Amino acid sequence: MKIPAIKKLVENYSLAQLQEAENAILEEQKPVIEVEGDDEGECLTHILASIYIKDRMEHHATPFNQALRDFSQRVRNSIS
Image (cartoon, rainbow, N blue to C red; front, side, top):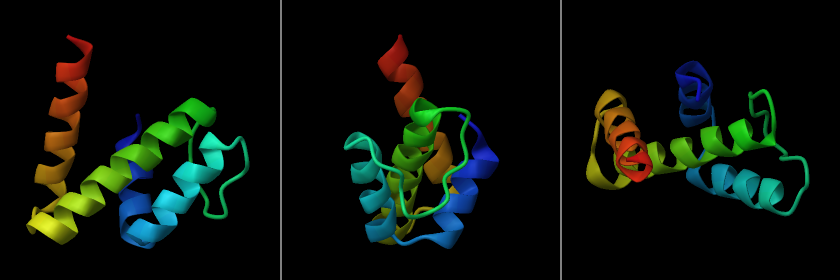
């Protein structure tokens, strides 16, 4: 997971565009938007993170840094 790639997605694309990119990857297609990542798994991680962060920012008025921390905490909790 690369934070600069996630930040770029959040800053440059709408929630709808990010969700379309997620669906494209899940259907084994290339997303219309540019998603940085070493492989499809990392690209999907970046998209999922950006969707979560963008949603928190738009619907809960959460600043980017806090939304990123919330996502990171969520990932850590799912691993442990």
